[in-house]
Amino acid sequence: MRNRLFSVIILIIFFFAPSVFAEEIIYKIKGEEKYRLAEVKPEAIANFLRNPNIEKAERNIRRYALSAPNDIFYNYQWHLPEIKAAKAWSMEEGKKGVVVAVLDTGIAIGHPDLEEKIWQNSDEIADNNIDDDNNGYIDDTHGWDFINDNNNPKPDLTGDKTEIGLIHGTHVSGIIGASSDNSIGVAGVCQKCTVMPLQVLDDEGSGTIKAIHDAIYYAADNGADVINLSFGSYGDSDAENEAVQYAQDMGIVVVAAAGNDEKNLNKKPIYPACHEGVLGVGATNKNQKAAYFSNYGSDCVDVSAPGTYIFSTYYKNKSLGYDDYYGYMEGTSMATPIVSGLAGLLKSYNEKLTRKNIMHYIKANADDAGLGDKMGTGIINAYQSLQEAKEEK
Image (cartoon, rainbow, N blue to C red; front, side):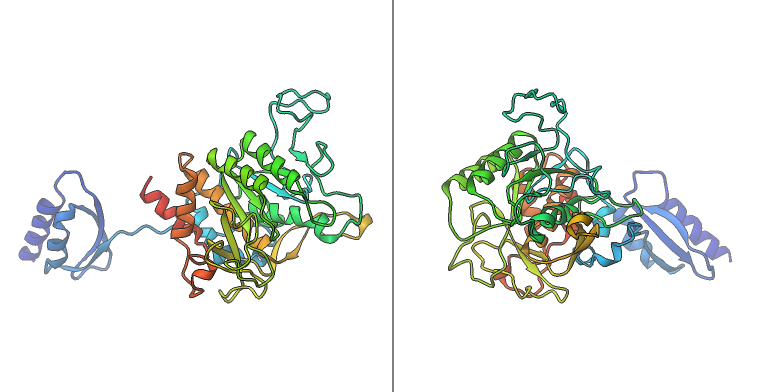
């Protein structure tokens, strides 16, 4: 008993004397049931573990709550666990000041899961028919419609009113930034980021280079941090490339879809994904394989993300037969906003990160699923991307 007491006293004096300690240790003395807690100098840990009076000892590792959001359709969103979103949210959920511009078919800005996430131009006074901020656009309080040249970037209700024309932009926006933990609907990857609606695609889901060019400049000039481009075709464009370069020169991460034609982009490039410096995104399925439709090619696909049966926000209009606020879509169009959401998370985590920093963290920390370089560096891992950013913060 005296020897044991003496050993414990020596342990206390030698290891636990006041100092600057870097490690917490939990340990168990032989014959005792409960663990004790101590702080031990790093250089003394090895000796501590070899002490014959210590039955067990280990570092006091921290674990973190991984609770899922309470959004009622969260369990439908298989893509979020796939990219380790919940673990990433333990580090960062996004910040309102980080803006992701969505160039698409327009957004249902009154959607209950999006209305609090829509960008507001604080320098513009609504409905006074004056360009208050002198940016060339009158009453652009929530973005701009570059198809109809007005300040209403909602889905286009003229023309054929196709499903893709009505729903696509809203679905993409929900993937990026749907409100989370609000007991309804779905959760966005960057839960608290702001979404800037810029309509560049018409009621049939197509748009011109002019609209895209002008919208990219608008996004860059009005504070976007990330630009999501869930569209493309196989003709190159100097004007589009000029706009992309302009955005990149302003430090904006530009993310674009690789396309859905099962084509090798090394042989037939698609744009804007194949413009230099753009983060091109391929799509994967639940089995971590390339989606049956996804284009591929190491020249243009930088990373991959889930793109099949993605559950997100819908445009709802009962008079047109669209009765649901939520539903499924698939395509590289859906994989792309998952990556844009991660870019928003990284920018939220550290506002000083450059465009190149963010792209590096996304690409370098993707999970190698055995897809080869034709699908980029792998399937994005939001948690690991933030972890590396933390280590270098």
